[in-house]
Length: 296
Length: 204
Image (cartoon, each protein chain N blue to C red):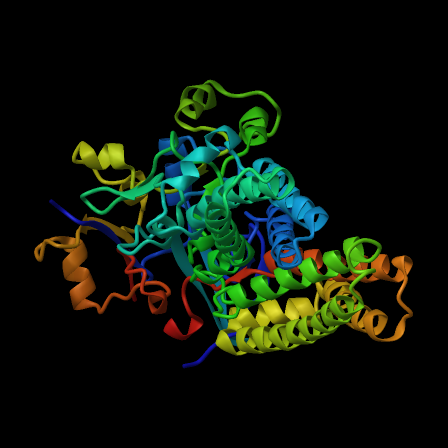
């Protein structure tokens, strides 16, 4: 089939690629807080690290809805978003967030006040953790479910969401736990550091596969990848997501001597990469023209 | 029950955008909201160059991605196949707008109503009368002029088209003009590879 490379057009009455403009930084931050908060809760839960779990729970329960409410056109009707559980990943994500808020909150209270029996506590913990996983991955499903934007329509999207969520969680556990529970557990510290290293490398491989797949999926996908790597968004994508989010994070983990300052720097670098990727995924989303030139 | 659809005859479209104006007049859509429009494409290279005009509209897909992703069920399909948005259920999340492969949805912002079509901050009597049907913060799209269709009339863009490049009709009725043209001239759907089954067809 003959294909033609179009130009990016805005509101002009010209046929061409058009950018997605409905989702921007607000929803990117909402998903960032959701994923990182859930990741922090998830990793902290394995070590019963209360501070990490509380911070993660607050990120999902307070910061994420705050950013979402800023995005919604009719925030007071947000409760209606639970109606589409049968077909919408936004509804499923909302349900998971509600379950996480409820069961995660009860689990935290129980850790402190010991109000539940052991079996009940286990049930609450399992539900909270399952909801936590869904909160981490559902952005990926929301985006990959969309047939309109070749950049997003990838099976790797949920894995990218999950990996970045876990990476953010490990990063923040290292930071918050350094002078608390990790001081007494140097083996755990080493394990988490190795996990962080592995996750950064895995993120890099995933991102490369994702961009490679998008570039060969369609012309619009190639245009999106070109925007990220060569054109207008490259000045943001390469420094923030690749250089700071991956290369600098890797260098700091591997080479810098461990200190609070270094862990803060690692967290800042990794989280800049994470939030940068989310914003740029929305910015680089491009629609194909409705009709192919080959028709004429 | 009919299954309404539309056919665009690309040989007839002259890119006058009378359909765009008729739609705005019929539906009082706010500034920067065009439920239908005609885009152009330059084809070929000098000296063998021509320009093609392509009318665009909501395709009222049978398997509409906008309906699938809507978390509130605000987007729904009527029995006659017209895809609608219930402005009282829409929360303005924009999921439908991002999911529509044809980018034929618009999210309404309060500023659009405040500044008016002339961007002067003052609304004309026409705008004051028409904006009541919209709710700021929600998403809107072409409705195939459902009030007109319910009254047995054709959509405004169809009756206005001076070259009759737009044909509206029942896709299930073998004797309807739309159906006959699709069959006779091998009508095709936009971005058919997405399997959204649009009820809008193009013929050349």
